[in-house]
Length: 209
Ligand code: T5A
Ligand code: NA
Image (cartoon, rainbow, N blue to C red; front, side, top):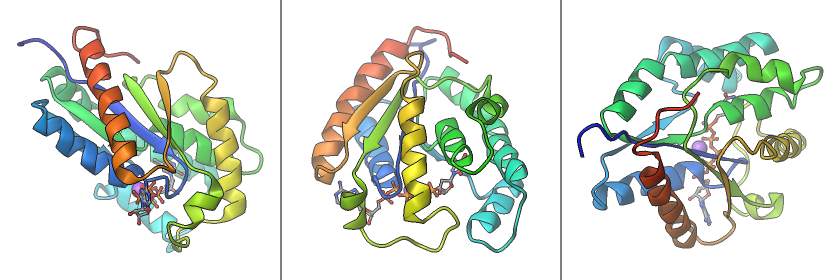
């Protein structure tokens, strides 16, 4: 088995789609199946850059829109050496949000074009699989109200959903759409199957950009 790399598996989706719930379960299930697996999340709020992002999301500080976009991207780049090292050492990474969140959220603001939004993340390690958890706004609403973070409003989330749909047209990315309105266990089983296949397909391939 030496020399085989781990897979980079990303979970994306609208607010309250269940990304964090599923990411935790997926890491545990893959470990049980014998795959060395670890979880990551973006934003990673514990770093210095992550603390600036956290403060912005919690509306404790105000940051100019381009600036916060670049900080979200920098928060990914600062983890790249660690990500590559883990993948190369055979560890599969399950990532709760990635560059797609960055692009979908910022490009939903006034006067941002998609092309500009994508540039800072160009060159990041390419996910082997992007699991898109799809829920309708009606179902998401049954999962509790919004918190107090900056992007948690219906009108903004509608724009974000449209941007994700646009991003999913990119066929160079291995998107898999999963109906996340099903119960937690059903969603989990599908994510597990798709992930095991991705791990198998990625293991002797180079890490993409
Ligand atoms: N952002 C992020 C950017 O603008 N740019 C970027 O580059 C990045 C990376 C923080 C914000 O930052 C923005 C996007 C966000 O606005 P976050 O910390 O990931 O991002 O956001 P959270 O608010 O923590 O997460 P979400 O609201 O997106 O929720 P999840 O993780 O999708 O959902 P989860 O798992 O927490 O579940 C929500 C609730 O639903 C229940 C759960 O038990 C929980 O109570 N639930 C289910 N109920 C019924 N059936 C199911 N299948 C269920 N699955 C979960
Ligand atoms: Na989450």
